[in-house]
Image (cartoon, rainbow, N blue to C red):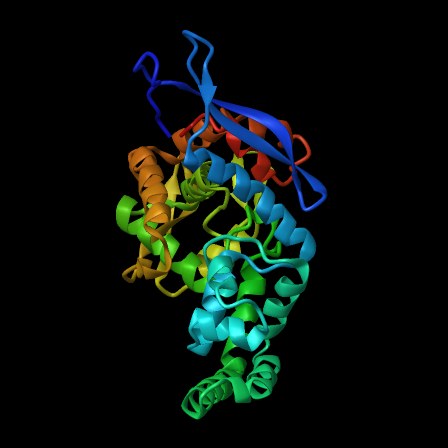
Length: 331
């Protein structure tokens, strides 16, 4: 984020400072983002920087209390084909409450648990039946039919969840930057990167994914891929990276010689569908691809070695906390 000072008109320095935020009686650590004019010492924040600060705290609260994330709340309603108003009615919320949750308001613990319960289609069907007298007959029949279809689709969903468990070692939370975990998102992310960069060695792809996720966390308060990263000898590496790159038929692996060693390179054998990513996410992905496109694997590894968060955790080969994304120097 680049902001010009309202006092001098010159670009201001972005300042990242550890702080705490009390949310509903609980104190959470976060990194405060501000812009400082070094000429006169003035400092202020923007709506965008305040949003990133809030998201850091809100996501920790959601994780601790088992409250669904915004994308899950939106996807749930869309899955059942129900309007936000009707969803609020069926769950027993205020008229506009569900819509507010879709735009970022954090549900109360009780409402959050109700939403999570409704993710089970059998539970939601019971709630629909309990609300029958509050719906028109047409609405009731339409919603009931759709939920019954979702129940029938559960077998396929369970297969997808099993596949996701093979690729994502950590569940959604602070370890993976609170990113959604979806095999479809991950596949299309890899395809898009390969479309932008061409043939890419696995060593370099590890670093590209790292920078995408940690830059996204710094700019948005949430990562993108759903992966967690371990500090290894040659730089940050996604957990289960070998499974990630071999999981999709559309991502082709080829044996190549790299500096006298047999290595695997990745090629796109399909076209990415980026409809599941926001414009903001795509902009971050493309920025990293453009920055690293012409780098060799060795240069990409060296770039990651300049990151303080890698140096701090490589000796013990620990997971790299996303809270350290604000020390990122390579982007």
